[in-house]
Image 1 (cartoon, rainbow over the protein chains, first blue to last red):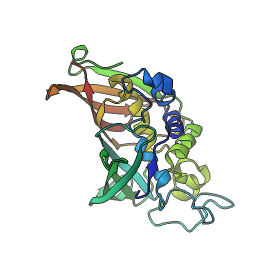
Image 2: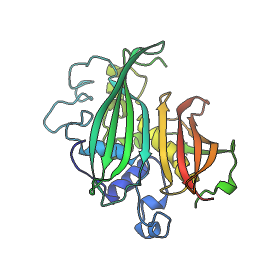
Image 3: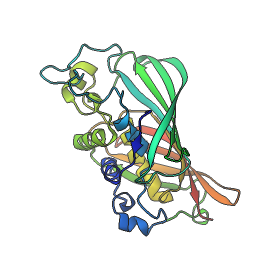
Image 4: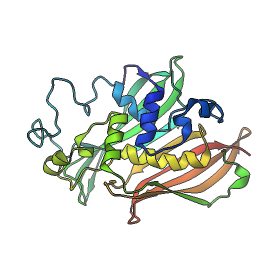
Length: 158
Length: 140
């Protein structure tokens, strides 16, 4: 994400609902003022939603372009190599402070290590690591994220 | 609510059900809020016929987010300094997820107390889906 990610209260509310979190510190600004957080904050995994503001993000339909999900046919495009595509293997966050509505984040993305491993359940696994540093409107580092993605040779046996 | 070092001990465990009979609709909600619209999470036709899985399954980040509910409910708001997980098994519609947090250590650094937690979330069959750790600032 090189674009700006504006942290908004409505988005925090939707995100908190979607993870099943009813803590009112994510919903009610009057209540949140009475808490130690002294206002609405974002849940710890909220920066995952930076995908919404990533112009080139491949897992969001682009207006006017074919989409690989189903329509008239099971997929809108030719099947991609890797079958299931990429899956998320690991996610790690380090919090320098917690996000609040009004923050405007930008990020610096660094490619990390790449490695491969054989697995019984999914064949060859290709892992790749990405480090994302999220900075606020004052250029202060707020969250450091380390993500590991994996592309499987075939769908994981169940 | 804030966790106090004096109220907990190493080895102590806390458990919370963080998803009960997980619905496809909640997975759709997560797709919408996070912006991850990968059809393997919401599009049963694509997932069965193209991706080759028996049904849609939850985003790893949904299971991490739900697991995080148990953590913030224990340690308090804005207290986390680190939180990381591995996604060790997929989470499917209908799953009921229970998070167990084990106190690994309680320590003091520069006058600030911290708790290190071992984080594990399992489904209704006892199969672990998320495994990781978390660190939070706590009161003395």
